[in-house]
Length: 97
Image (cartoon, rainbow, N blue to C red; front, side, top):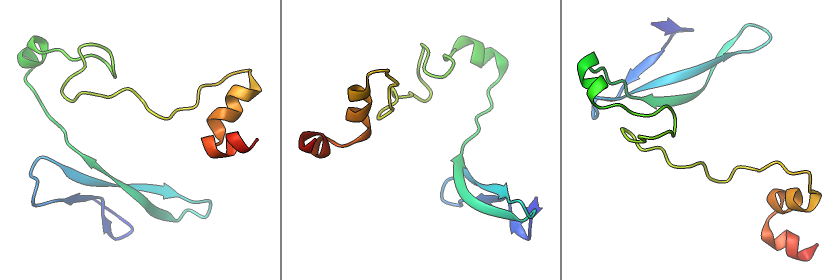
């Protein structure tokens, strides 16, 4: 499959189980630009094997194949302005204030 003369899928010969997929956006003028890539792996299992080894949705249990770590560094919304300031600026700046 091609878009604007470039391959949509690019296979890495060193890893037979994964491939790179380019991400495209369309601007207001209709021009399509590649603005990133995602490395993907798709596993297909027989239904019987999948039912014997269930995995949870997202980070729900059982969390394996692959294990998904809890999110880090996200802002927690609060009505307390000091708590929000603490999350938005670094500790050095907070000490100066």
